[in-house]
Amino acid sequence: MHSTMPQQTSQPGPTHNLETTPSNLGRVLALLYGFASYAVGLVTFIYLMGFIGNFGVPKSMDSASAAPVSTALMIDLGLLALFALQHSVMARPGFKRVLTRVIPSVIERSTYVLASSVALLFLFWQWRPLGGAVWDVHSSIGRVMLYSAYAFGWLLLFAATFVINHFDLFGLRQVWRHLVGRPQQKLRFVTPFLYRIVRHPLYVGWLLIFWSAPIMTLTHLFFAVVTTAYILIAIQIEERDLIREHPEYAEYRRRVPMLIPGTGNSSAQVGTTAVNRGA
Image (cartoon, rainbow, N blue to C red; front, side):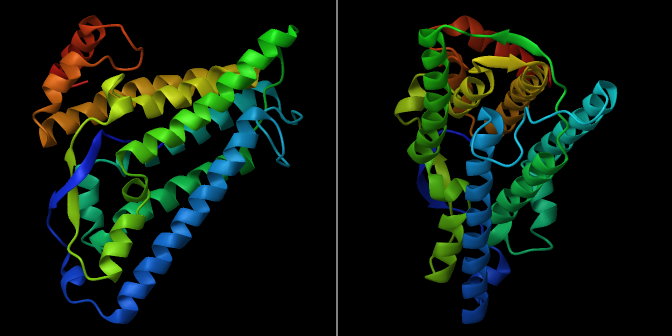
């Protein structure tokens, strides 16, 4: 669940010392690291499709339960909390400043992608199903609609990454510019198509993925509730950073609804209050 913002065009930004006078070997190693991180991330995303949808993977969200419910609940909560902490802490500007004192800034985003993938892979490995069923849709039309919503969620998710800048989001743009000797550039705030409908189309995609289940088990419901709560909290933190970095985001925030198209300024005003209070 990579944090994103509506942005597309570029403007000059600061570069790390290793980006100005790197060796050719350093350029190549950075590129290989970036592509390796992207590859791990892609494999993790593909597995995640099967993990949540319960198809095509050796261990899915609703695999056979092998632990007491109380134990499984605590383990799963810990796994989700670990991912949330990694995903949010590493996305904060302060952490990035510290991290880029240790590693070249050109591979900071690739490192974030790799760490997020490792956190998810660990979650897949250690996940403990809870069992039980909350609902089971028997209608053929209902099942088709929910499976279609699940597929649409993934399509929307990937589309949202490309309308901003997919390759920057996953760190490839940075290592490629480094390889060819171009200065690193920050992406300027703009609002491409999907981001004029809602502020967070990528998160809308995630919510469709989490909740579009013909069979909603207790495990799936727990996962969906916790991840939805995380998204709602993460949005407040992310938007606070965006307003600080891009003052024009405050006006955009007042005009465009957060997650539900057509909800107008009321939802934006609620979000603005939360940011102003330091949520």
